[in-house]
Amino acid sequence: MHLAIIAGIAVTGCAVALGNVSRAAEPAPVASMPTPAVGDVLVYKNNFVTVACSRWQITATNQNGFIVSRCGDDTAYYKASNGALVRITDKRGDDLVSFKPFSPSIQFPLQVGKSWKGTYSGVTTADESAWDSVQSCKVIDWETVQVPAGAMPAFRIDCTDNWTSSGYAGTSSNTSWYSPEAHALVKVLDVGQPKWNMELVSYTVH
Image 1: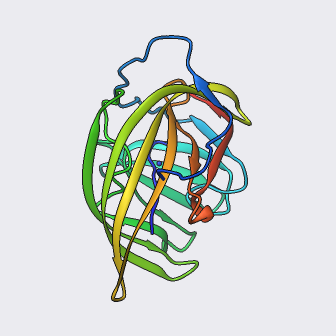
Image 2: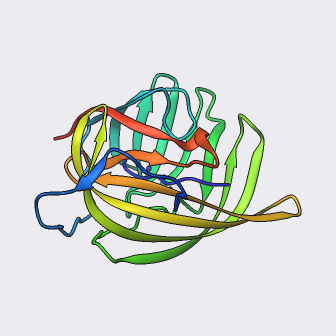
């Protein structure tokens, strides 16, 4: 079941070639949580966290404890304390996607070799999916990934979800790339559930 997201949030240990990646030229950094600014813009190809809206702009950095980003009539809410995605709502305020208490797919600071685990409940209303999951993630490498926004040095994060849903249980996995330069996930690859796949087209950060 799953996803990986933050300030831009999403994740799969893929059994296929990831493609369009190479070792980054500079040494691997340690990345702290980015400081968002009103007016920061992230543009994704086709969709963002399963939602079919591409251009997301930050409109508030601490609104009742949330970083708020908007795309058309849709609104994404991230925890201001850790940058983790909590939910995306439509123009009526109804959830399109939600993670309770939040998506654990990124944990700052990031550095190669770091691993963590988180428990959450997820919902995507478009396909009426609901699941509970224990997600385990690890920063595998610091490498350059090619996306429409360009060749970007990024942390490669592999995550595995052990999920349960309506009496069923299983395991899913995904890979995401986080760019300190863009303050965001620039690519998510989930072979088993391509609805989570994302690629960054352009960005403006302050």
